[in-house]
Length: 200
Image 1: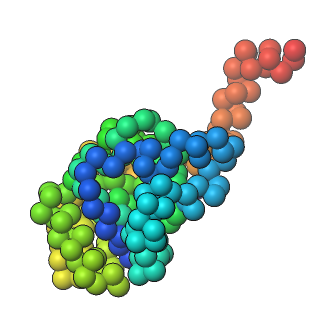
Image 2: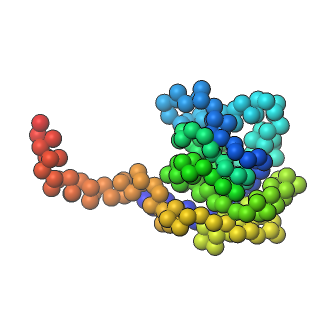
Image 3: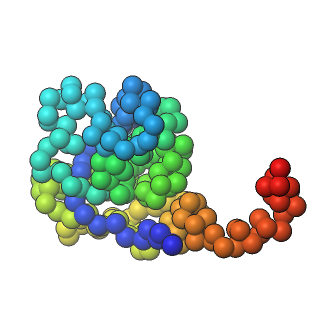
């Protein structure tokens, strides 16, 4: 099963601010979970508590959003994979930002979430549009390398290797293993050390 990620469309949610780190995305006390299930409810837990229901992730007009619009150096700090998992479990399928921390970016690609970069003028325009009209749909197009929101269209970028992994479906390592199960079994059957391990 190939899980290609080419176009993501849906509601958008603006999250203004630079250097939003992974501890803010998912506080350390939530890292003890055995699975990632339930992390979506705790995304930005401390920020949301501090803002007393006024955080974008709590506002009713942004519920169900698919595209997160951020600013610079998003996902900096510790390398916890729980951060992109929490964002994904909340419902986000793509992130548009000015820049991303490298490890956060890689963790997102590993679960099929494109993190695309855009000029500050583009992200600020998107955030302003979504603040003014939360009903607007945002489309992240990895084929055209564009982001569209209402009448607005902006250029986005992404390292070509990561873009190809997403658009070709090769980001999904587990999916590739399942799809190639018969070939893996055939190869394993011809490996003497695998047979030896089974015999013992």
